[in-house]
Image (tube, rainbow, N blue to C red):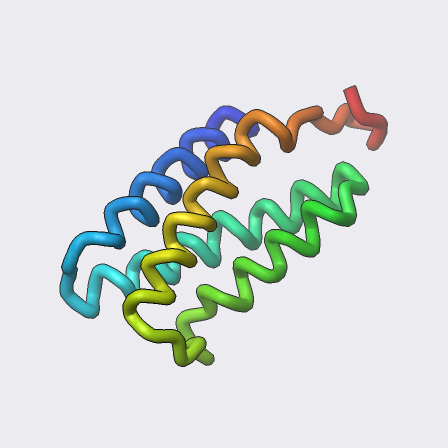
Amino acid sequence: MTHAYTIARLIVATLLFWAVAPHSYDYFTLLRIVVVCVSGYGIYLSAQRKREGWSWMFVGILILFNPIFKMPLSRLTWKYVDVAVGLFFVASIFLFKGSVLKDGELQ
């Protein structure tokens, strides 16, 4: 499942970088949903791996991109946020490693 999560993070990062270009409102709604789903799974994995710092970073991203209670940021601010979070997801591919064994110990 970690390979699928790596691919999901690459897709999310690509979508976030692509969000700098002009798009319809529907694109940004879909982007929020995808980012929240990938962040939610990141919270689950980091909690399972006992990586509290990562959990809090994924929680912050989840809150920021929440599609129900939207953050009132300007279009320019969102562009910076999209690039920063995209870079975070790319970095997490290399820095957020270690798989959980069946008995709960880390590899």
